[in-house]
Length: 193
Length: 193
DNA sequence: TGTACATCAGTGAACGCGCGTTCACTGATGTAC
DNA sequence: TGTACATCAGTGAACGCGCGTTCACTGATGTAC
Image (cartoon, rainbow over all chains, first blue to last red; front, side):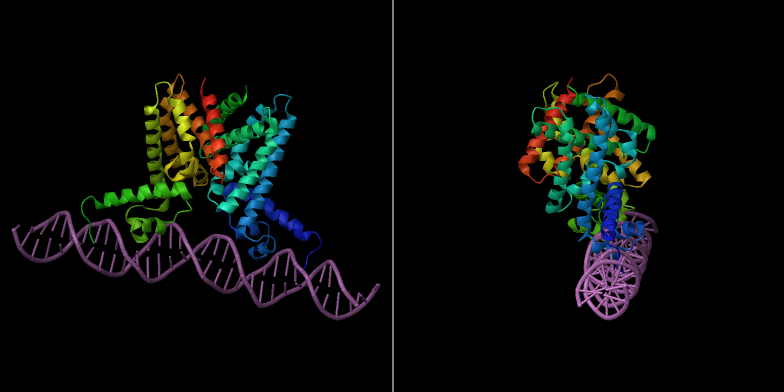
């Protein structure tokens, strides 16, 4: 049947949002088209009216994840007292909440491992999307030039992502909590003067 | 046919070594049993005379990777002037050589993303193997107690792994080179006094 | 405003493919006598 | 030392399964007249 005016656009967005969560939780290979569409009470066949391929969806979902996470970090920085933005970002990024919810968290921490193994063209596209994330975060980093702030943002976020990723391999809740506290202290010091 | 005395043991080791390389390069899901066995001029059927499952091989290969990487880092530290061990480790870990050869490199950088998504029992086992790696590295970290050195090793290596992982998403050689140089400076400073 | 037709989001069977795993079989070597 | 038999690493066909993708079809709504 034919659907009303903006119906298609809304469906597309629902697919992207669901995929953004699922890919971060289960990886690019870990979440199939059928399961994804069923979650939205649709069948797999309709998927290709919205996306050329699963890879196209992956990129779109990554873009959405980057925006979502960027918004969250921006909100944290905005809520912090002036001068304490970066510390607040580090604390939020390395929080237990973030650690326990990869599906709503940083796509760099959740998907870097998948992106590395993508074919070159897709990998480069995804790298670009991740860089737009770092660019947005750059304003909270110290540095004389825009380039310097951006480069520092890349280092800070990718290294926090590494520690977060390792913390997620730990089953023990208390252990994770200690590890994250250590990590917050480390990154706060590393990024402070 | 039946094979000579130590033949089985040697075959097993060849499988583990090949898997250790392949898993780091292509991930746990990215390298199949058939392809792996064919690389060794064997057929897939024989695999189950050596391992109960692919997951059992993954653990074994992770163990081998951790030992291999631990040996490499230890050699780097041993070759460094007294007091310069940690700086040498950071430089080697964040070198272009390491970045371009995940198949021979750090399993934490290459496989953390896969390990996070393993079923709980396997994930805990793999986490333990990664911890034995951090424990071995702990002696090169500053700290009053063994526990403190170990915790610092976890933070340092996991955060370097994150940056290395991100660098691997970058197709451009020169860009990677700059990023790694930034990362070496960052981690050397963070880990020094 | 009413009618006829075109559109196209969504359906569900079907495709080829590679995966992990199983199993009956082979046959050279180890072992028991 | 020689013979008969057991062993078992490795083979290759076959299994069920889930995957991404294709396609003929449906039918309510948009659009043209």
